[in-house]
Structures are given as C-alpha cells and as structure tokens.
Image (cartoon, rainbow over all chains, first blue to last red):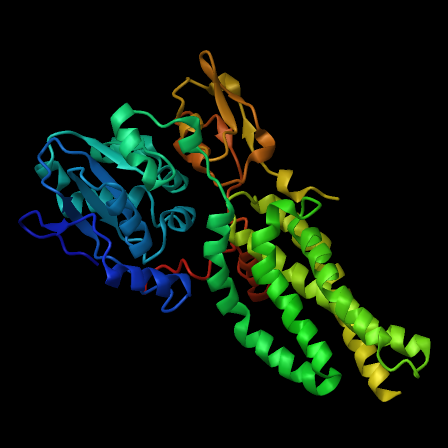
Length: 327
Length: 94
C-alpha cells in the first residue's frame, strides 16, 4: 500500500528500454514469477513535464508501464501508475483493480491536483472495462479521456487529438498470438511430461510421441493457426486440428504388427484417435482466455456443448486402452 | 455448429441515449457507431461482453452481463464452487 506523503512525490522515468527491462519482459513472457513483474505505484515524470503536460495512466505491470513509456519517447508528461497487483491493464480492468476507485484513490495519494494545472487524464482504452469516466469526474474533478488501445499509437493520438477507428479496435494478429505461446507451453509442460511417461510405459514410444504432438498442437499450432482453422468455435477448431495431428500416429499404429487381427489393430488406432483430439480441443478451448474476442456467454455455451464430448472421447479411449492391454 | 463467438447478452435502449459517444469510444470491437445524434448498434455479434460500454454509459442505456470469456477460469470456478469465475493470475492482494 502506498502511503501518501506530505510532499507530492514524483519519480523520474525514461523512455529507454534497457537490457535489464528486456530480460524482465522475457521472463514475464515465459511465466517466471508471474505476479512479480511490478512497477512501484505512484507518479512518474517522463522528460521534463510542466503543470500543463499530459497525464497518462497505466497498470503497475512492467510490460504495461514499459510499453507506455517507450511509446512516449520525446514527449514530456506524467505517468500515474495504479496498483493492479502486477496485472496488465486489460485483465486488471476486467477484475476491477484497474478501476474507478483505484484511479480516484491514486489521484489523492499522488496529489496530482497540486502538480498539474489541468484536470485531464489519458487512460488506455482497454482500461474502460474497469473505469467509469463520469464517476471519476464526479468524485475527483478529473476528466477521463480514453486514448488508443495500443500505446504505440499515442504519439499520433496526441498529435491529431483523436483516435482513428483503427486505433480503437483490438487486433489479435500473428505477432500477438506468437507472444502467447511460451506461457501456454510452460503451463502444460509438467502435465504433458507426466502423461507422456505414463503412456510410454503403457503404449510405447509411438503413443507417447502422439501425446506430445497432440499437446503441442493445442498450445503451439493452435494459437498460430487460429484464424485459418475451419469452423467458428474454439473447441471444434481444436478437435479438427487434434484429429489431423493424431491421424498419422493412428495410421502408423494400425500398420504396425500386420500379423495381428484387423480389429485389434483398429482398436489400437482408436486408443489414439479418440482421446488425443479431445486433449487438443481442451487446450484450444482454454485459449479463449488469452484472446481478445470471446464473450462469457459464448465460452459458457462452448463448455456445456463440448466438454462432455471431450470427456467421453477421453474416457472411451482410456477404457479401450485398458481392455486391449488385457487381451 | 453453435457459433459461440456470436453469443452475447448485450442490450441497448436508444431511447435513453444522449449521444455522448462514450460507447463508441470504449468498445474495442466497433459494436457501436454514431447515427447523427444517438449511438447505434452496428456489430452486436462482435460483442465480447467486456462491459466497458455499460460502465461508461452515463444514462444506463446499455446492459450486458460482463465477465471473463475464459474457459480456464470458468471450468475452475465450476470445479471449486466459486460463484464468479475470476482469473487465477489477477489475484487481489499479494
């Protein structure tokens, strides 16, 4: 908790991203010390701001703060950092920590009204899910202006005084999706290793390789291929991708041991073809939380529609594996 | 196919609109656009229920059941008996 001091306390900030910052970003992207990438809350002076300089508001997550200050290179202004517990603007706004109360509280704690002569705050547009502009105005006298979605568009926004429709829309392009892969990968690594080892001893090398392939399809291929996979729902996209990835393994298992009965070989193939696509589909469904366009109603509907299918396919696959091992 | 991506709870009453444009400004999916004096729903199917428009509408013309569109959070909430799904990483307090 920040203690409000007698003298307004303004810390210096620069637009330079140092090697140490980059290392911190790298660790954050890999999910290392997930909630530890924090900036001290309060007020920062970027360049040589005066009482008329603009005030930008951001979260106390290093990636948010650094995106803002680096985008503002050559611009004099103040940055007011809210306490969002080390969470980015969008997620903190959804949670309400990047919210009306915190903006009002931080204005009082930093005594911004003594530092600037104007009464205008520039917030990132994605903070609007947590902040009611008219409430901030009513409670503090400061007018909230929502800037563009991306900090990189701020210089143009400041120059022209308005955000173009393009600046107001979230994108989720390949670059955005690639950035998410490391943290997705870290999440599944341990469970994947455990399942792979178990499957290696029950089903052999080919089956355990198939498990790795289905998992990586869910956390690496899925984010990359998202817009191009057929159908609209995340789960159905995941089933299709998982099926395509599992198919060669199933065929390989079917063509192995040609001396065995055809139904036995088909059964073995099914022990891969049933559960693996549901693993990929489950991981795909979980990716909804990382995207910028899924609604709660839609995701709830997907869960009720597809989770039972995934559970059945996985269950039948496991029972079949046990049954075949007893023959 | 359920087209889950197009499901949402967004409702808008143009009668209450005072034309402040806040919904047009805050929506990251261009769901609203100005129609001379009042806002108009132009892409309701693109709504992801973030709730920014409702929160920033000074007259209460917009309602939407906002919440996290995240399967991981909702599955966890269902398994642990939580009422409101929340992001496991957006913990309040340390």
